[in-house]
Structures are given as structure tokens and as C-alpha cells.
Amino acid sequence: MRPRSLFTQTALTVAVTLVAFMVLSMSAAAYFVYVPLANRYADDFAAVIVSAAHSLQSLPENMHAELRRQLLQDHGIIVAEETSDLSTSNEDIIYETHFHDALARRAGQDLAIYESETSPLIWVDVPAHGKLFRLGFDGKRLGVNPPVVLLLALVGGALLTLAVSLMEVRRVVRPLDHLSDMAKKVGRGLRPERVPEEGPEEIAALAAAFNQMSTDLRQMAENRTVMIAGLSHDLRTPLTRLALAVEMLDEEADVDLVRRIRRDLDTMNNLIGQFVQFSQGIEDECPVQLDLRQILDSLANDLRSEGAVLRLHRNDPPCVYYADPIALERVLTNLMRNAVHYGDGQPIDVTLRCAETGVSIEISDRGPGIPADQLDAVFRPFHRLEIARNTRTGGSGLGLSIAQQLAVKHGWTISLLPREGGGTTARLALPVANRFGLRLSSCAA
Image 1: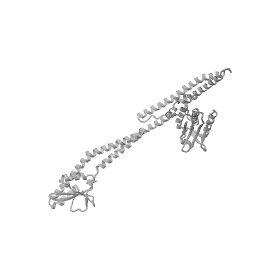
Image 2: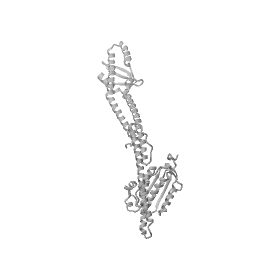
Image 3: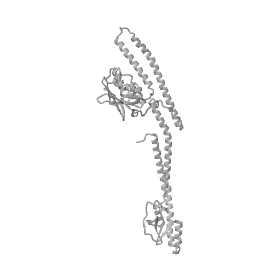
Image 4: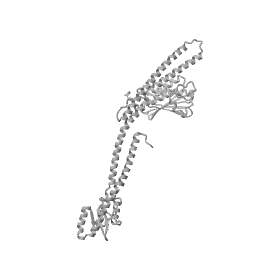
């Protein structure tokens, strides 16, 4: 699975590149440096060994002592009289293969190489004109390990490069993470502080562009609010005059017509109020301690007074929660009214679930339900299902949009789920951290 974060992707890319570099460097060093050097070293030492055996055979016995002294002093070679504690040479010795091949070339035949069991010496039986000479030398001469040195150097350099690269990547990614957090706040309708315009030129330019975008969005929202407020004022003025004119009609006016006009005027005023509400959003308020049971009781009683049938299901202990009361009541009101409008006159069930592991409020109706492909679309402004367009109480299509806007702003989650037996369940999930006041805004402090 491909990592999704920029830091992980960059770290993985740098690590894979360094590993490939190490493999390539080791292969090139082994082929062009280690093998030629090993062959040359083995060949030179094999030549010394074979030459020493031939010198011992050709010189008289009285000169052997001087020759042995010179061989030991100059080349570290020992001439043995008799060695019995020998075993076959260890093939793990790094130069053993090269040395064996070089001896075979110099002597014209394969020579046996032995390793002493009681000392660090290595022995070679070298024939010279019918005589056999056993020559020994310190095994450390074949035990040197240039590849290990090269590997350690490359690994050390690679790790150092990787550490520095990751530090540099982190320095670049940190401001991007900060920008991402600020962008999420803007998406939730909040007004984050300005991002520091510092660091590398590209990052500083990105921060400046983000700050300008945030300012422009705030200005656009304010302009929208002012424009809709002005339109609502201009529209409500003639609506008020129409309402006064209706009230001043004489008693001979058509009662049914007057009733329909009053209903239409009320509907238009409600629609204008929804437009203003959607454009304004809500300012942040300090979270306060609320009893969710009392809030649901109050909202349910308001709807019952309008003729709705609501059944409140709750667990016994009080459910204390810290939240913005105005925003929470607006979200719940919109969800409950939405359920009443599309519930086909059936009772609405409101269930409060409050526990240490989670808090949720479920509002369930027995209406026609929402098609699966429309579950996301119904949260878009002015989007209404076909059933809503065909009824006079369909509204403007802003109720769920307002609820979703406020929920996202405060970190809540609204889910629309099919209800078993028909209908829809609107679930409002609240962060459990606010259940105990663990995540309050700075104004509460």
C-alpha cells in the first residue's frame, strides 16, 4: 500500500535511492577495485612463497638459516621442520580463493593450504625440484577485509545522508502540515490566524497566497451576508405591507383566499429567514455545560405544540456535554423539523445515547426514505428530493445544509441512515472529548 503523507513518500524515495546507490557502488567497487587488488596481492605473495621454496632447494644447507631469517624478517614467512596440528584451510578467509589460484599458477600445480589448529598460522606445502618445503605465515595476511571497510563507509555515508535528507524534508513538510490544518479550519467556517510567511521562498509564497485566500473568502462571506440582509429587508418591506393590507380587508372578503394569502406570506417570510440564516452561519460561542436531555425535551415540546408527535428515548443518567448551545439547538431543530416534514405524519423517535465511549442523538422517521445515491446530495444548498418538490411543505432545501455547515464547523458528524422497517434515521455524533470538557475553546479559559 502506497503511503499517503508527503514525509513518508519522500523518506521512502530517499531510502530506496540510497540503497540502490549502495548496491551499485559496492558492485562497481568489487568489480573494478577489490577483485583486481586481491588478484595482484595474492599473486605477489604467491610468487614470494614459491620463490622462497626454490631458494631453499638451490642454496646449500649452511645458508638456510640466513635465508630463513631474511624470509621471516622481510616477508613474515616461516620454514617448518615438521607440523602435525594442521587442518584444511578455512574457505571463509577473504583472500583464500585468490591466493590458491595464484599459487597454482606460480607452481604449475594445485598446492594444499593448511590452517594450524593451535596458532594463527597458515601453511603451504611447496614442491621445488623434487623436494617439499612447508612454509607458513600469519593468517592475518589473508584475513584483511577491504569489502567490510568499504561497506561500513558506504552504509555510514548513506545513513548520514538519509538523516540529513529527512531533517530537510521535515523542515519543508512542517509548514505544509500547518497550512493543511489552517485550510481545514477555513473549510469548517472558522477564521484561523494568519500563517507566518517565512521559510523558503516557495513556502513563504504559498503561505502568503493562503492568507490572501482566507482574507478573500472572509470578505466574500461578509459581502454575501450584507447582500442577503439587504435583499431580505427589501423583500420583507412589501411583504409587511401586503400583510397589513390583508388584515385591513373588510368582512366580505373571501375567507379561504385570505387564509391562503396569509399562509403564503408566512412561507415567504420563513424562506427569507432561512436564506439569511444560511448566509450568516453562526459566530463561535464559548462551549458551556449542557444537559442534552433537557435540550431535547425543550425542542420536542416546541414541535409538539405545533401538532407533531415525538417520542423521546433516553438513558437514565443525565447526559452532560460541553458545546455551543445556539449551534447545537439549530442543528437539532433542523434535523427534527426535517423528520416531521417528511415523516408522513407518523411519530418521530428521538434517541439519546450517552456513554463514556461516545455521544449520539438519533432522529428517526417513517417517511419514504432517501435513495442511496442521494445521501450526499441532500446536504447541498437548495437540493431537494423529488418527493420534496411535489409537496407544499418542501421548504427551500437549506435545512440540512445549515445543519451540516454548523456540524462541520464544530467537529460534529451528521449521518443519514436507512431505518429498519422504512424511513430514515438522522444521527448526530458528538466528539467524546467534549463529554467531559476536555477540548474547550480558548475563550472558555
